[in-house]
Every structure is written in C-alpha cells, then in structure tokens.
Length: 528
Image 1 (cartoon, rainbow, N blue to C red):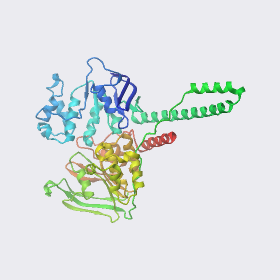
Image 2: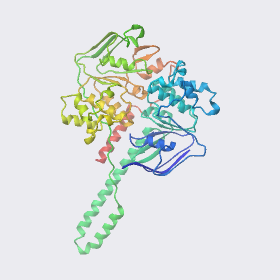
Image 3: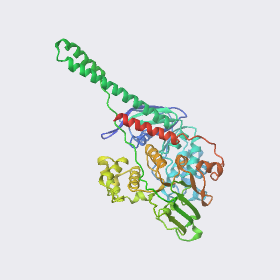
Image 4: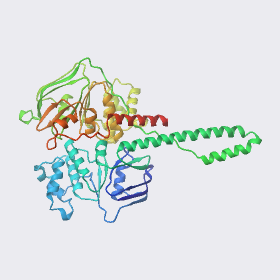
C-alpha cells in the first residue's frame, strides 16, 4: 500500500504537482498516464526515494519492498544468467529456472544465457534489467516503459506474466492497449493534479473531458451572470435612489469570485498529403531475397513476392532481428536486394519513416529548417502550418534538433513526410517515443489516408486497427499472409502459443478512438 498526501513538486518555474493525493491498495495494478512532461517518471523517482517532494508525504508499510525497471545499464557479472540470478532474493538464488523462464520469455536463447551481458544491443540490455526487476520479488513493481525494445512475442509473454503478478504494480507505457490489459486502475496526471479511476484509460479520459466540459459551462454561466450584474451596477450607480442596490450587487459579485479559463492543451493534428495514383498497383515485389554479405546462404529473407495496391494496409510483423526493417529499407530503395525485383508505378511517391531516419536529422538545424529542407517548393507559411500541426507552434519551430526529445524528433520526421505528396507510406515503428494522444491521432490519420500503407509495428492495437494483410517473419522465413492480425492468430498463431486465441474485444478500437478524439476536439472548441 502507498499513501500520497498533498504532494507538491516544482522544477524552477515549472510546477509538476500541486496538492496531489492518491492511495494504492493491496493487489492494485495501476496504469499511470499523462502527457509527456507531466511528471510520471518524476513520481516514480519520488516513490523510490530518488527524488524529494517539495512538500507533502509519501508513506509505505514497514518492510514494504519496491522494485523498479532500471533505465541505466550497469552489469557486474560475467554472464547474462549470473547477472539475473544476482537480482533474486538471497534465499531464492538457487532458483536458476525462474531466471531462465523469464529470459526465454524476453527473447533470449539458451546460448545467450552464458554470454557477456555487455555484448548485447542496448535493447536487449534493457531486457536484462527488466528480467532483474521481475526476479527481485518486490511488494510493488514500478515499470517505466517496459515495452520499449520488446518485439511482439516478448510483449505477449510479458502481458501474460504481469497478469499473474501477485503484488502491486505501477506502469508507464505509451502502449495503451498493453496497459489496459494488465492493469486494474488508471491514475492520471492532468493539470498538475492526480485522478485515480477503476478501469482502463478510456474511462479516465472520458471522465476528464466530461469534468472539463462541466467546468467550462459553469465558468461561462458565471461570467454571463457577472456581466448582467455589472450592467445593473453601471445603470444604477448614477442614481442616488439606486445607490444602495448597486452597492449590494457589487458585494454579491465579490462573493461570487471568478473561474479561470482552462488552458487549451495541444494535440497532434494533421493530414497526410495524398497524391492520387492512376494505377491499381503501386509496387510489385517479385522473388525478393537479401543478405548483407551477398551470399544466398545468409539470406535474411528469400523469394518473397507480393504486390501493394493503391489502398492496401499491410503490416510486417515478427521477432526482432529477423529482417522487418531490412525489407522496408529495400522497398524504400535504401538497400539493394541480393536478388529479385521491386517495381514501383511511375506515379508512385513514397513517404518513409525509418528507424535510422531520425538520426539523419541535422542536429544544428531548427525544426522549421528541417521541414523546409524536405520540400524546397514549400512556402514559409505552409512550413509553419506543418510545424504547428506537429505541435511546434510559434517559437517552438525555432528549437534545434539537438535539444529535442525522441518523441519530438519523431514528430519532426512525420512533418517531413507530410510536407510533400505521397501515395505509399513505409513506416517503421512510427509510434516509438510518441505519447498516447499522439499515437491515437496518428492511427486515426492512417485510417483516413487515401494511399497505401506498409507498417512495421509490434503494437497489437495498431495491428488490429489497421492491418488488412500481413508479411510474417517466423519459423525461419518471411511469407505473405492474406488476412488481418486476428485471422493470423486464429489460423496460424505464433510458435509456442495456442493457434486459437480467445477473441476479446480490444479496449480501444477504431470507433472508440474516434469517439475520444471527437470529445477532445469538442473540449478544445468549447475552451476557445
């Protein structure tokens, strides 16, 4: 159990928390939500004792153990298995099997267990830290973005593991579908306050929108009442016989007080610039193979054939390191296939969001400069408009790329794509680093996009919302699958999992996402 009472926390002029209070009861699993910069990670640090609140109290029962996913990489043991075993409570360090189960679930092979943990990629090193956090057997588990760097198989395993977690848990993730499936409550940080609700994120955001609509209507009613009374005072003030009445009205106005207008919160909002294509097929891939050394025996994929229609929605799925990004880069003409052919329609125009493209942004350029650089024909006014749509309004468009967060850089890259017309989008994990609201805005726009889409993603929410056909990297090969993600789960399934998944309605489907976005727009309009 954790009790937070009247917490206040500021960094310089920025106030994160103002009189925040909440209670986490035994057995509750909490999804912590809020826009980037609202203090989610800071709250985790305060609970861990790594950050001190300015005022207020945070209390836990005596002997209550809190464990967390460490974002910093520091290994002391010679092998992966030894590093993880060290995280077990002293009395349980004989239980190597538990460590092996978790490591396997997170995508490590038996051969990996004996390797030096420092030799793995950054993503897999984070997975080692995640394994250590799960092994520590705390009363409460704090997980800050545990889904980062996990592929779809590891995400599905982690989801199942956390649903069996016996203690308390707090989770930060931009994967709202994942959050809703492993939590019992939602704790939201909004306008420097905290609100806890039983249930998922949709319920929380609907409550916030309703409350703010009520507040705004009450504020307008009060404002109109004050105007009416002020009008009476102005009329009566000059007449001696009415002076007492005017004074009475003034006193009433003082007692009424005022209600401040709520600041309008910025959300991602844009339209992809579509270029119509006269052909039914935008791209044809025939007998495509690729290896980095040019040797067929080392092919990442072989003899892959499919075509992309002008309105197709294709998702590329599979475990990390199997070739998904490589295939997308071949289609974007950034890599040359070992064999086979890629034929693009003469009117085909690509928009490519690649994992390495973010690193190609010029660090010393301003956001506005990067948008203009992507399309020299763009007017300054149009470039400013794109910056605004990407939440870089006014002076924010002058921020240098070097000081931007990962999420901000992702928005810049999206802005570069919408700055010129396209009819085929090639997107490699475009939601990585984006906050929940931005992800939902992107999903909605991709649904409405008039061209074709090929997307690499590990998000089952996105797969269920967008994908009509799949390219699957599994069982040592890549193959085209006619049907959506749920069809794949029912008819084929992932290796090691049952071939039939119980059909559970996603807590956030397309209809619900649109409803939420509509409510948000109503709120913005009401506040203007």
